[in-house]
Length: 452
Image (cartoon, rainbow, N blue to C red; front, side, top):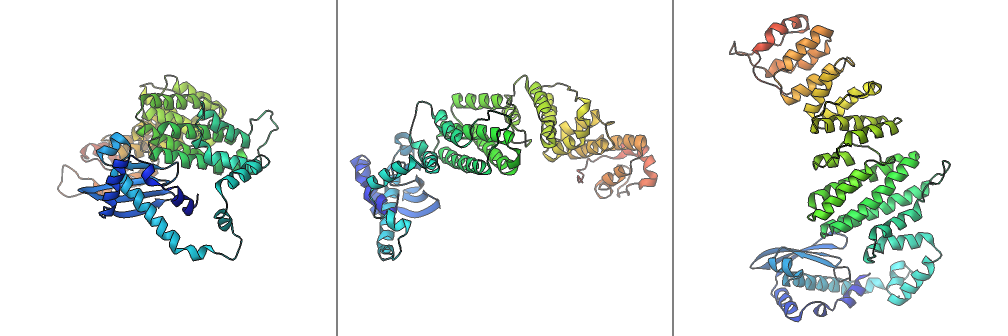
């Protein structure tokens, strides 16, 4: 809707109770609106002075989809207040002044889209779109994507699913392939849904945000599984969906919605086409952080391991999840020997994400699997500032004579202090490391080492 149409619709006095409108008008005339800032497209914030300062936000002002928020207690009770009305009056005045100042510019010599829309009535435009949408699939899809939220159906999830199914149809045979153009369209629509979900979050419409995100994520995962040649873009979209779900999980006030989110995460974690692309952004991790991980979570991860045998990234993430879930459930879970070659990368992933205790326990348990596992064990102990660091280092060196342990311990040269002397003693060099076994007991202050 262009600015002129907004101004024509803006009979503000008819939108609100007359007494409340008069209070808002008086506040505006008393110069109560101090500032108007455009945050993003169709979203404005206003600073109102009324005894004290209030911040008002208007989303899509002067349209039928307009939404407001204000910090005052009256708004929280009535969903409207004089501050919001004063801000809306100021907005109308602003766009009216801009309209008048650009009247000459509108008389263009070329036949532009903007010029045409300024001279087309609402009914003419509706009839035009209706006619062309019946024969143009892309236009019909675009209309549904952009305006589906305005149509409330009995099953809103089915509404959004039908839009996505029109772009990516279910695979019916092993030879079915998705076209690059279809995947590109899916990505664009999914991100439009995510934008709408974030708008819904800002307005407190958490259930709508969940339905939009859930539906888009499910279709993205399905497409990712069946179309590996489009991985990079789809991975980015899938991770964005998880980030929105993280926000939802923290903001949702309805217990019913919290249960629905957890049920969805537990359900999608089982799906064969669900990818485990990130230690942070996956369904099991989200449930673990909410202390709602299913009792059979390790079984779920092990089943997914068998399905993801061609993806090293997903194997490493799933093995890390098995370690973390086992620790949370106080289970000492054994890793199948077929996955031993991935344990160094599992250790690296756990350490880089701050799960030092889990990494230390795993590396100690599987210290004989490879020559690098002791190093990862020592790195994790260093980050935990464990007193047994030196003792473990001595033990590992005596057993394997790995000179890299010396390099790992070098930061001690400048950071350690000793109880038997006021001055710092140099760290023994590699030739005298054997003496560490008799010296390690005199170290008193734990140190955080650099992880190489």
